[in-house]
Amino acid sequence: MRKLWLVFSQTATLCLAALFVISTLKPEWLPAKGVPFPGGPTAVLTVPAAINEAPSSVPRPNSYNDAVRKAAPSVVNIFTSKEVRTPRNPLLNDPLFRRFFGEQPNDPTERASSLGSGVIVSPAGYILTNSHVVEAADEIEVLLADGKKLVAKLVGSDPESDLAVLRVEATGLPAITFGSSENLRVGDVVLAIGNPFGVGQTVTSGIVSALDRGQLGINTFENFIQTDAAINPGNSGGALIDAGGNLVGINTAIFSRSGGSIGIGFAIPVSTGRQVMEQIIKTGTMTRGWIGVEVQELTAALAESFKLKDPRGALIAGVLRGGPADKAGVKPGDILIEIDGKQVIDTRNMLTLIAGLPPGAVARMKFRRGPEEVELGITIGKRPKPQVERQ
Image (cartoon, rainbow, N blue to C red; front, side, top):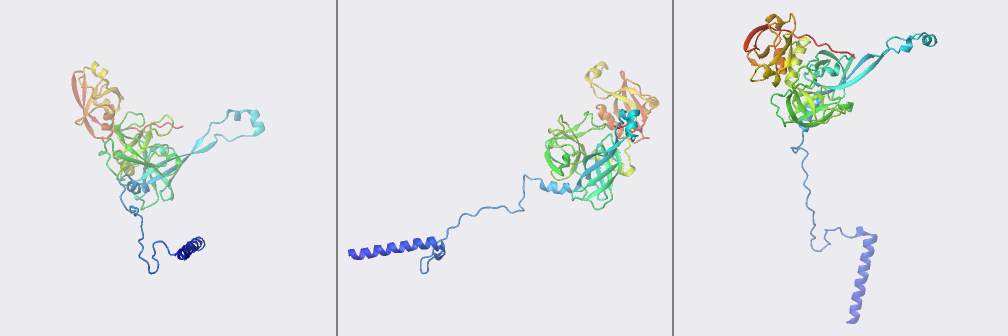
């Protein structure tokens, strides 16, 4: 019995040693894990739990990619250049200097370049942008989203609303879809698309911070959409779109002490942009009504001095001699309170109401003159073009 046990233990030891050598030197001789030995019991293969992966087409509730893909092809980069005269150095007039260096050319010039953005509004090649982006430019080039570069011509501009229309010789361009700025609410999500700092097309997101912002001293006619979507130099003239990818504004200005975005940007509502654009395309210019008066804000203190219960209206501080208001009998000190049945709230509201009247039409305007109300018919004139200072 003892001899039999020794034989068994030696055999087992040799088998284990052989298995160790084979597993170390020739592991491929051994059957794979989970594969049964011939004639042996069926092995069970253990499979780890599958990893859940979302399909590529699953909707992304926190993404605005669809809106960007819809609008981005309609936003272009605008590059402008103009000739700038540099002041003549007084040293050039010195006879001794001219003796040694000869006559130097007068009024040396150099080219200054700038950049901005624009929005394709028609497949026929019309592009809406800011007036200050293309102001006094000698050459205008437009870079499309697909990388194609085209020369653009200025159709017309309106400095008082800071809008301009360009046109390129191309057809079938991806025109943007117009949204409704009147339906915007504070808190609505908006996206700004443009070319900040010349880095290329960029998208920033934010919300509508405020509506109908005015009296900022940026434009003559102001009813800005305020947003915290980052707007930086180069974004001017670009698109402000809603979450559906529709145009609701034209990015125009920022409030900044450093030159960069601090979360206060302003865009011209698309309703204003469309009105100006259509008239420029039709006539080449923007025509507004005018009556020839200088107005002053009616403050609470002034309203009290005029013994008014409600400080609404616009105080006529001056009347242009021979102008439409002067011919109709308007006097300094009158308070304009109504235009064609529409109440005048303040000077900005008055300016907008009169600007919207067609030249040559007769408007019924109601004034408060002392304790009485006076109604006058005024023939609307054509608003003179603003004088733009050139540097």
